[in-house]
Amino acid sequence: MNDRASFTRMDQSTAADWQLIVGEFKDFSQRLPDRILAHLRLLDGDYGGFPIDRYRHCLQTATLARRDGRDEEYVVCALLHDIGDTLGCYNHPDIAAAILKPFVSEANHWMVQHHGIFQGYNFFHHIGLNRDMRDMFRGQEHYARTEEFVALYDNPAFDPKGQMLPIEEFEPMLRRVFAQPRQSVYKAALQE
Image (cartoon, rainbow, N blue to C red; front, side, top):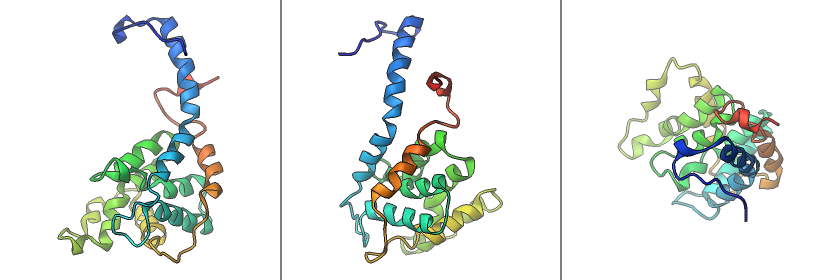
Protein backbone atom coordinates (compact mmCIF):
# COMPACT_ATOMS: atom_id res chain seq x y z
CA MET A 1 0.00 0.00 0.00
CA ASN A 2 1.23 3.49 -0.85
CA ASP A 3 1.84 6.13 1.78
CA ARG A 4 -0.85 8.74 2.04
CA ALA A 5 -1.01 12.34 3.17
CA SER A 6 -2.55 12.84 6.59
CA PHE A 7 -4.59 16.03 6.16
CA THR A 8 -8.39 16.16 6.13
CA ARG A 9 -8.54 19.71 4.79
CA MET A 10 -6.36 21.03 1.98
CA ASP A 11 -5.42 24.11 4.01
CA GLN A 12 -3.91 21.83 6.65
CA SER A 13 -1.57 20.08 4.20
CA THR A 14 2.21 20.24 4.60
CA ALA A 15 5.18 20.31 2.26
CA ALA A 16 5.84 16.68 3.19
CA ASP A 17 2.27 15.79 2.19
CA TRP A 18 2.78 17.47 -1.17
CA GLN A 19 6.12 15.82 -1.74
CA LEU A 20 4.32 12.50 -1.42
CA ILE A 21 1.39 13.61 -3.59
CA VAL A 22 3.64 15.01 -6.34
CA GLY A 23 5.56 11.73 -6.41
CA GLU A 24 2.31 9.83 -6.88
CA PHE A 25 1.13 12.37 -9.47
CA LYS A 26 4.21 11.79 -11.62
CA ASP A 27 3.49 8.07 -11.79
CA PHE A 28 -0.23 8.61 -12.34
CA SER A 29 0.31 11.18 -15.10
CA GLN A 30 2.75 8.89 -16.92
CA ARG A 31 -0.03 6.30 -17.23
CA LEU A 32 -2.37 8.81 -18.92
CA PRO A 33 -1.83 7.35 -22.43
CA ASP A 34 -2.90 3.91 -21.15
CA ARG A 35 -6.10 5.35 -19.67
CA ILE A 36 -6.84 7.29 -22.86
CA LEU A 37 -6.40 4.17 -25.00
CA ALA A 38 -8.65 2.19 -22.65
CA HIS A 39 -11.30 4.89 -22.80
CA LEU A 40 -11.07 5.10 -26.59
CA ARG A 41 -11.72 1.35 -26.73
CA LEU A 42 -15.05 1.95 -24.92
CA LEU A 43 -16.27 3.26 -28.29
CA ASP A 44 -15.70 -0.16 -29.87
CA GLY A 45 -19.07 -1.67 -30.77
CA ASP A 46 -20.98 1.54 -29.96
CA TYR A 47 -22.78 2.27 -33.22
CA GLY A 48 -25.38 4.73 -32.00
CA GLY A 49 -27.17 4.15 -35.30
CA PHE A 50 -24.14 5.16 -37.40
CA PRO A 51 -22.85 2.99 -40.29
CA ILE A 52 -19.71 2.13 -38.30
CA ASP A 53 -19.03 2.17 -34.58
CA ARG A 54 -17.50 5.21 -32.93
CA TYR A 55 -14.13 3.49 -32.39
CA ARG A 56 -13.75 2.69 -36.08
CA HIS A 57 -14.88 6.22 -36.95
CA CYS A 58 -12.02 7.57 -34.81
CA LEU A 59 -9.54 5.16 -36.41
CA GLN A 60 -10.78 6.04 -39.89
CA THR A 61 -10.53 9.78 -39.19
CA ALA A 62 -6.97 9.40 -37.91
CA THR A 63 -6.05 7.14 -40.85
CA LEU A 64 -7.23 9.74 -43.35
CA ALA A 65 -5.25 12.46 -41.59
CA ARG A 66 -2.12 10.31 -41.37
CA ARG A 67 -2.28 9.24 -45.01
CA ASP A 68 -2.67 12.90 -45.93
CA GLY A 69 0.65 13.67 -44.26
CA ARG A 70 -0.62 15.52 -41.18
CA ASP A 71 1.77 15.81 -38.25
CA GLU A 72 1.53 13.51 -35.22
CA GLU A 73 -0.27 16.00 -33.01
CA TYR A 74 -2.94 16.57 -35.66
CA VAL A 75 -3.34 12.81 -36.21
CA VAL A 76 -3.73 12.22 -32.47
CA CYS A 77 -6.38 14.97 -32.39
CA ALA A 78 -8.15 13.19 -35.25
CA LEU A 79 -7.95 9.92 -33.33
CA LEU A 80 -9.37 11.42 -30.13
CA HIS A 81 -11.82 13.98 -31.52
CA ASP A 82 -14.86 11.89 -30.47
CA ILE A 83 -13.44 10.28 -27.31
CA GLY A 84 -15.88 12.39 -25.29
CA ASP A 85 -18.92 10.59 -26.74
CA THR A 86 -19.18 8.20 -23.79
CA LEU A 87 -19.34 10.90 -21.11
CA GLY A 88 -20.48 14.00 -22.97
CA CYS A 89 -23.56 13.06 -24.96
CA TYR A 90 -24.38 16.74 -25.39
CA ASN A 91 -20.86 18.19 -25.43
CA HIS A 92 -18.45 15.51 -26.61
CA PRO A 93 -16.12 17.99 -28.35
CA ASP A 94 -15.60 19.83 -25.05
CA ILE A 95 -14.58 16.59 -23.32
CA ALA A 96 -12.09 15.67 -26.05
CA ALA A 97 -10.71 19.21 -26.12
CA ALA A 98 -10.25 19.24 -22.34
CA ILE A 99 -8.23 16.01 -22.50
CA LEU A 100 -6.04 17.36 -25.29
CA LYS A 101 -5.63 20.97 -24.12
CA PRO A 102 -2.41 20.67 -22.08
CA PHE A 103 -0.69 18.72 -24.86
CA VAL A 104 -1.61 20.36 -28.18
CA SER A 105 -1.41 23.68 -29.95
CA GLU A 106 -4.13 26.27 -29.63
CA ALA A 107 -5.09 25.62 -33.27
CA ASN A 108 -5.59 21.88 -32.74
CA HIS A 109 -7.38 22.43 -29.45
CA TRP A 110 -9.81 24.90 -31.06
CA MET A 111 -10.37 22.52 -33.98
CA VAL A 112 -11.32 19.62 -31.70
CA GLN A 113 -13.44 21.80 -29.41
CA HIS A 114 -15.50 23.17 -32.30
CA HIS A 115 -15.59 20.23 -34.74
CA GLY A 116 -19.11 19.20 -33.67
CA ILE A 117 -20.70 22.47 -34.77
CA PHE A 118 -18.70 22.40 -37.99
CA GLN A 119 -19.78 18.79 -38.66
CA GLY A 120 -23.33 20.02 -38.07
CA TYR A 121 -23.18 21.69 -41.48
CA ASN A 122 -23.56 18.19 -42.93
CA PHE A 123 -26.63 17.12 -40.93
CA PHE A 124 -28.15 19.80 -38.67
CA HIS A 125 -30.81 20.62 -41.27
CA HIS A 126 -32.06 17.01 -41.00
CA ILE A 127 -32.75 17.35 -37.28
CA GLY A 128 -34.30 20.81 -37.21
CA LEU A 129 -31.15 22.80 -36.47
CA ASN A 130 -29.42 25.51 -38.45
CA ARG A 131 -26.75 23.87 -40.58
CA ASP A 132 -24.95 27.21 -40.81
CA MET A 133 -24.43 27.41 -37.05
CA ARG A 134 -20.67 27.29 -37.66
CA ASP A 135 -20.95 30.72 -39.26
CA MET A 136 -21.03 32.28 -35.79
CA PHE A 137 -17.30 31.51 -35.77
CA ARG A 138 -16.51 33.16 -39.12
CA GLY A 139 -13.53 35.40 -38.68
CA GLN A 140 -12.04 33.19 -35.96
CA GLU A 141 -8.40 32.35 -36.54
CA HIS A 142 -8.94 28.58 -36.74
CA TYR A 143 -12.24 28.54 -38.67
CA ALA A 144 -10.72 27.34 -41.96
CA ARG A 145 -8.62 24.69 -40.20
CA THR A 146 -11.69 23.26 -38.47
CA GLU A 147 -13.80 23.41 -41.64
CA GLU A 148 -11.04 21.53 -43.46
CA PHE A 149 -10.69 18.92 -40.67
CA VAL A 150 -14.38 18.10 -40.93
CA ALA A 151 -14.44 18.09 -44.74
CA LEU A 152 -11.33 15.97 -45.27
CA TYR A 153 -11.26 13.67 -42.24
CA ASP A 154 -14.30 13.66 -39.94
CA ASN A 155 -17.08 13.79 -42.54
CA PRO A 156 -15.86 10.96 -44.83
CA ALA A 157 -14.92 8.63 -41.95
CA PHE A 158 -18.19 6.70 -41.67
CA ASP A 159 -17.47 4.21 -44.45
CA PRO A 160 -17.86 0.52 -43.49
CA LYS A 161 -15.48 -0.30 -46.37
CA GLY A 162 -13.13 2.58 -45.64
CA GLN A 163 -9.52 1.93 -44.80
CA MET A 164 -8.34 2.28 -41.24
CA LEU A 165 -5.04 1.60 -39.64
CA PRO A 166 -5.04 -0.42 -36.40
CA ILE A 167 -4.74 1.35 -33.05
CA GLU A 168 -1.19 0.00 -32.73
CA GLU A 169 -0.20 2.33 -35.56
CA PHE A 170 -1.34 5.37 -33.57
CA GLU A 171 -0.30 4.33 -30.06
CA PRO A 172 3.35 5.50 -30.31
CA MET A 173 2.16 8.88 -31.60
CA LEU A 174 -0.33 9.21 -28.78
CA ARG A 175 2.36 8.35 -26.24
CA ARG A 176 4.70 10.99 -27.68
CA VAL A 177 2.01 13.71 -27.74
CA PHE A 178 0.99 12.93 -24.15
CA ALA A 179 4.56 12.52 -22.86
CA GLN A 180 4.83 16.09 -21.55
CA PRO A 181 2.25 18.84 -21.31
CA ARG A 182 2.97 22.07 -23.16
CA GLN A 183 1.05 24.06 -20.60
CA SER A 184 -0.46 23.13 -17.28
CA VAL A 185 -0.50 24.51 -13.78
CA TYR A 186 1.08 21.16 -12.81
CA LYS A 187 3.85 21.24 -15.43
CA ALA A 188 6.49 22.37 -12.93
CA ALA A 189 5.64 19.43 -10.67
CA LEU A 190 6.37 17.02 -13.53
CA GLN A 191 9.81 18.42 -14.29
CA GLU A 192 12.59 16.09 -13.17
